[in-house]
Amino acid sequence: MARQVALLRGINLGSARRIAMGELRTLLEAHYEEVSTYIASGNILLTSDLPPDALGAELERRIEERFEIEVPVVVRTREELAAVVAGDPFAELVTDPKRYQVSFLGEPPDRAITSRIEAAAVAPEAVAVKGREIFAWHPHGVIRSPLAKALGDRRLGATARNWNTVTNLLALASS
Image (cartoon, rainbow, N blue to C red; front, top):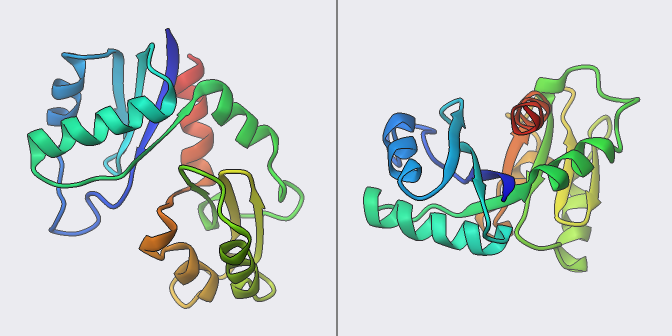
């Protein structure tokens, strides 16, 4: 069985789309092994025999049935997450991991989307698209960032985590 990390998109960001992590854990413990959550923004660690895409679809269905909200879920195995961390394109550039984000997608973006995202990165921001991940350095934060706005477009279907969260999830999945 593989250790996997499920990333839920757009929950607990305001008064809508709230899911209590304790209730989510209880739901998932009935179906998977070694279930835990990390912070309230929708990070689940679990062990399952299902491939990541099938697990993501199953989690989406279970969450919708139980909580009556549609929540896109992106899943990475522990090994895939380790490859994301090992492939960090901005290790020498980033000075604040809270302002460094990785957007996780279900599949690699097409060239038109990649071009639009790359065009939105205005120095000193930086962006790198690597497979199903988009690495984005926001040294002045995301509030007025055209790059952050482009990455937050629902049509992209991505869910973002800051670098601290990414590395902490890897550490938890590895323990």
